Length: 341
Image (cartoon, rainbow, N blue to C red; front, side, top):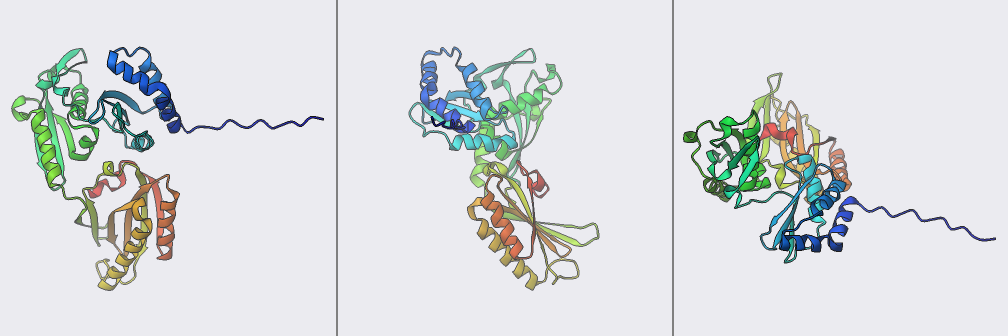
C-alpha cells in the first residue's frame, strides 16, 4: 500500500517583498537599458500592476537621481494614509547603487520651471508662475499664493490643482507637507512676484532657523468655565514620523487639584513622573506630541506605529499601572491634534 503525501501549501509572498524580488531579478536592468536608449516599450505597463499589488493608490515615476544615475519613486501622492505603505516599501528596498536609488515621495525637480505642461486645453510654461510668500516663523510655515497668466482662462479648480503640482515639483512632496501651510491662487502678478528660486530660498531659510522639539503653552477654558492648559510639541508634523499613524490618548485623573481644576504642585510632580515612565516604556517606538489638563484630568497624546503591537502594549501596561485608561484610533496625518498646531 502506498503512502500519500499531503501537498504543501504554496508559500505566500508579501506584496512588498514580491515587488523587490521582481525588481532585482531583471526589471532593474531592463529599466536601466530604457534610460540609456529612451525606449520604454511595455515597461510602464509592467511596472504599474507591480506597484498596484502593493497598494492601488500608490503612484510611481522615474527620473534623475542625486547620487545614482536614476531614481525610482513610489509615492502616496500626499495621502497620509498611504504614506506608511510607501515608507515601508522604501525601507525594504535594496541598497542604492550607481544605477538606481529610491524614494517614497516625489523629489524636487530643478528643471520643472523650464517645462511646459498640457492641462485643461492650455499649454503652460511653468517658468511663468510667480508666488506670494507669507512667512510664519512661529508656526514654521509658509502660506503661498500662486499666479500664472493663464489661470484666468482655466476651469474652476484647475489653477489650484496646477499650483499644488508646481509646488511638489519645485520643493518636493515632503517639503510641501513640511513647510507649506495655506495655498491659494493669486489673481494678479503684482501680489505674487517671487520666483521659484525665491520660494526655494524661503524654504531653506525656514529650515535653517527651525527649532525642533520646542513646546508651546496654550490656554483656554472648558464648557464649565474651568481653565484648560495644553502643552504641544512644535513643530507638530506627521511627515517627520510617517509610520506613526496610531493616536493613543491616556487619561490620568488627579484628586489634588486647585479651585480652577488644575493640579497642585504635588499632583503636577506626580503627573510628570507618570508621563516620564510612559514615555520611557514606549521609547523610540512612538512620540508624545501634546498633553492637555483641565477639570482634574490630564490627557496625554502619543503617536506610534499601528503595526507595532509592542508599542501599544507598552503604553497600555504603563498607563494601567498608573491608574490611567487608554484609547487608540487610526490617525495618519495627525488630524486629531491639529487644533494644537
